[in-house]
Length: 376
Ligand SMILES: *Cc1c(COP(=O)(O)O)cnc(C)c1O
Image 1 (cartoon, rainbow, N blue to C red):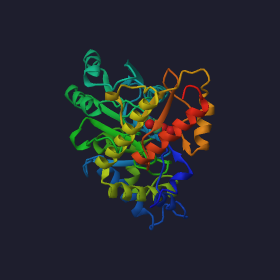
Image 2: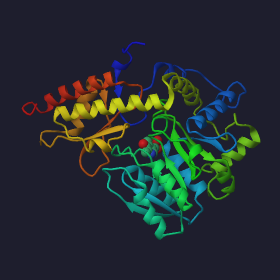
Image 3: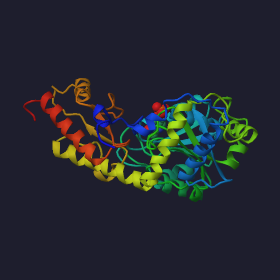
Image 4: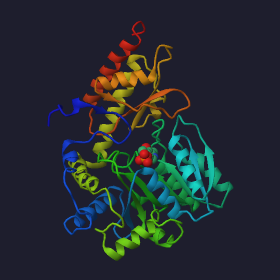
């Protein structure tokens, strides 16, 4: 496979990501989602992602939902946290804010814990809050905070929650498939949420929770929404078969996702993907430092998913124009930022390699020289 296809446009946004041509090609067909020709594909995808999550057959189940990451986060919170119950959310980035909003709007009582957005949350941050408030039954946290690039210590916090007898929900949307997590070792984890279009390198359009069967069953009837009820997703699977889905899915996205999972396996699964993204992120981080662009995070806190850097402080720097100039050269980055200070976010994920990142850095350098002639 040559690089010609990449040269059209490199997508360096933190999802949806650059996909392989094989994945894209699988979309170009008409498919009947309830037909017996497609059901095995859907059922197989569910088994494959459960395995990636380290889920145990008979103990964990994959519950898909049409839509993006917010939809599955809302569904998981509505399904698993009883109405009016307390849920603790460590706040250290844009996606934690979003989770707090959707939990609140679902009528759950959100307890927030403000933490700095420049380092990952750790068990010792959370433990005192739990000790002080026994009514907090659930903790929801973001694994990779896509707003800044930090990684919260989900395995460590999970162990602390298990000791404290509390339940954990994880927004693994920008982590799943790259950062390690083994549900078999985390009985406190009720559900891990993610989508087709980030580290698994599929198209956007379908979201998943890998969840504990016992807690999902015990939660039947409390979602307050048919569409968002993951207990109903499970009940439907048991009634109609695991190859059947309740409502029309983005069926071409599912077909492409099955191919994306083949490519994930061929690459060497989660460890290999993690290693490639880590190398991408390190290449970007070191390259920006060499260019005189300051990273938002200390190197030790820099996760492998997204690299955030400060915008140049030169008053001539116009971010919107810079993004367009990069795009004209074939590099597409996010055109907004979610940190308090003006930053640029560059995705290290997707079907891209450290060599691609070197090309990206050269394009950043060229574009910067054009935008700020004297400074460069
Ligand atoms: C992308 C992302 C989401 C979901 O965003 P959608 O646009 O709804 O797919 C949620 N959490 C994190 C950490 C993300 O990176």
